Image 1 (tube, helix red, strand yellow):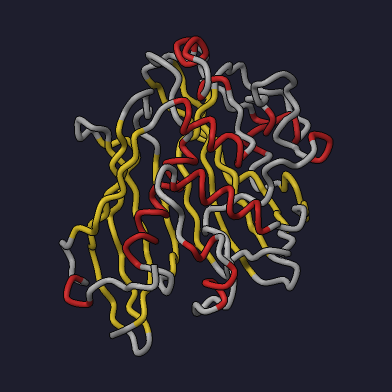
Image 2 (spheres, rainbow over the protein chains, first blue to last red; image 1 turned 90 degrees about the horizontal axis):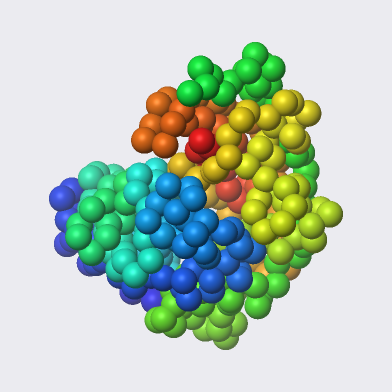
Length: 142
Length: 174
């Protein structure tokens, strides 16, 4: 993870490598175990249906982690996440494979580091966007 | 359908602190390792989050936590303001109860969105202090009824007073 992005790819429009995860109760329970987030809508289909959805659904906080992992996977250890924001527009239902993607929207070269803005999002296996957002990161120059 | 969820008392409470100076327990290296395993599963997480010898050789000089790591998870119930509803489900109206307000008549809650900007990284041994305030209310009709959006703002600093994170979280209730 000490690699940095190829400087030749730091341009608006470039899509960074995706972060892909199959999701379901085991993954969500594992996350609940570290975030102490044992909420019925994330563990119990009946609770998910009572809240208006077809089944239990995954935590928004886990999708936030996916967005951060996407950026870290691309930047390597020397990269710095400056900011991340997203909205939750659709549920991550049981059995969906979530693909987290990012596309560069702006690059600001500096003396020591390059600051980069990205559009980031999670989508399900049908390409439906679940959590659209934005991020700003910085990586070492050159 | 309810005309509004936002009472005059709720509107007047915007800007009030919810918790000032709540301290985490010291972050343990195994808290970071387990978090990283869970969020990267089934692939192994980056060594920066669990391999002290490797991490010492990076620009960070040692293990750091993933930026989104939550040092306030697993706080004992009597010190955790988010678990006052009893049972398994968090109290959807925790926000108003903690401000001493009559809560809205909502039954369900969802995470609506988050935003965060980061300062210094969290490391093993750090104690994080959180100060949270009510940033705002808004509402609009939705598929499941009148939706109440409440936003809280949170600022985290470490034991040296360095800024770790500023964040906002929007809760949707209906």
